[in-house]
Length: 298
Image (spheres, rainbow, N blue to C red):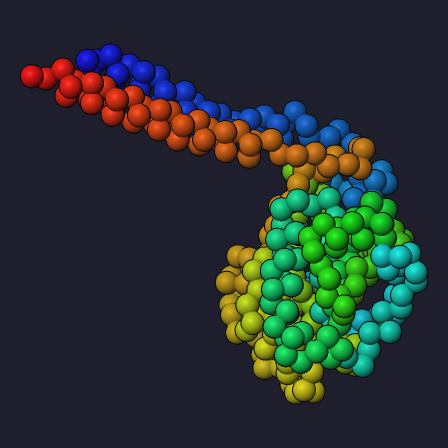
């Protein structure tokens, strides 16, 4: 009896383990076979840009070097395609982050967490006390329409939060001004995940890093800016902060300027579900046979 059930159990376990083990291999093969022969900027323009990983130390240093600088008077387009000068936001504290609309993991997560971090501040102090903008850096794909769809899809409805689309020609200068770094890789974008705090005079006063934000990260320094108080120096070593900087997003094909899904994740999920399903099936069969044997026992 035990041998009759041990063999299906062993086969089930082996199949599930093979599915789980195969996922990383499929990812490696996928990255190898799909690595483009041509290089391009995220805007889809062919260039000599080398596909590489983001230099975390250099990205962090560039980000920190932006602190104390005044935001340039760039002109971008809002979700309705209307021109917006960044100087319009002076007079109130401003939160700025960079996203790309085709991202299906990091950018949506960061956007939701940022929303949660500021919702209480909005309800307590009012939406008219500060502003927020998210800038689409992957041009021309992050168009006003794409940003409008992104905001609608992820439920961004705060009245003081706008999504802006820059012209491709100013993306480089704009991102450097804010200390934002990104590179195209065979696996997608490596980019520093930061929220920039700008005071009412248009001067960058702090960079906040990571995907998750707490009241201490965002709301507390924002309240100080609203009250026209100085923000204390950020506490944290270089290594502690850099551990949260490097972000990998969805897979980008610079030849077509489009994105595709990383299917290895689905193989991993399928393998896990298969394993759990086999274990449940085996448990039910074991329970039924045990009941059957107990019924046969005089």
